[in-house]
Image (cartoon, rainbow, N blue to C red; front, side, top):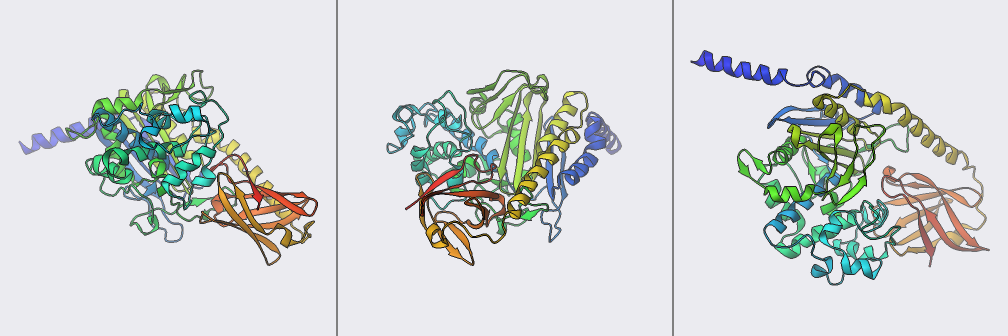
Length: 502
């Protein structure tokens, strides 16, 4: 009898493994190893779930370049915007429980809330916030909001200063404070802060025992990966950990692939894990209803004909299958999660270098393998253009540094010093020291150094390498300084800010 059971188990295991695509069985390790080398990624963790089982779960590389501690399935990463579906799912469940409606207006819960215009203020709903319908640009305001010392209410208050570039409900712009605002409704309805409600209703019931709904003090968490970037340098630079707990509903969760596998399995099993329902299927469906059409034209590079956004999740018809995915980006971390219910397939990939595309290209590679699509090496196809763009960016920095030749600015340093203000960002100050100017941003744990180049332009270098190196220009009226335009990494926000001297 024991021999029969052993034979049956062995046969089923052989059949299960044999059913996996050859790329997964034979080439996944080598593809990842080469990709990490090509894209200069210190550490990567991956999990693939298929047909209710974990078929691959592994770490590659190191979580810290100095200590050489290896990445494994327990290594923690900031999953950033992959937190958004947790927020949307929580609100969809509360709607299912008749505690709220996603069509409730934000002013029902926050009478003091204001958008830039009164029409949006009067109409904007929870669902609008979860769908990025405010009409602002993608990432607009994030230089102000990210890593700031502002409270959650203060960030919501500042949204009234975000002048939209498009019309409400007509232009989609990715908005982190929209998700913050929606997440704040949870506390109004349940009496629990977002981080407590999400932990109690999703994280703990799923058995995600090493997942944190707030990322503060991540550096002290056991098994935490260290963040890196090489966006503005030839070599990888270590970064400080982001603290975005004031934006928690938009991106504060810290997790590992072992825990996220349970989240994926729940998504694929209509809200169930091990026969126990964690989230009502109707609530999960609500998050997957397309609220925004992003594209209805064939993608020239990927097997996609439509692309849209639900509530905290993107969706497409990748390879003819309804596919749901989201990426997450924090300084030093880029991650993605993906699931295809028709194929009973889920994928999560976490990395600790924010300046690379491999974390998404690997997802396409795995999807193609399972969906039986022709093999194309996405990493090799994309690497050349990426390297060209990267070399061009580094050349621009070299050109800025070459312009620093101990020239004197047109005005004395004291003319530039003082207090400056931007209506969205708030206050900053500029002081002179050692022949340079130094910027202190009053509500942020980041500073900047201005070194004079020429033509009234200065090279701005931030204390946090992730923020970048850019030219900055003062606007003068004779011998009086009026303002300065300041740029930050596009990874954070695209448009520069004008700070006016007080």
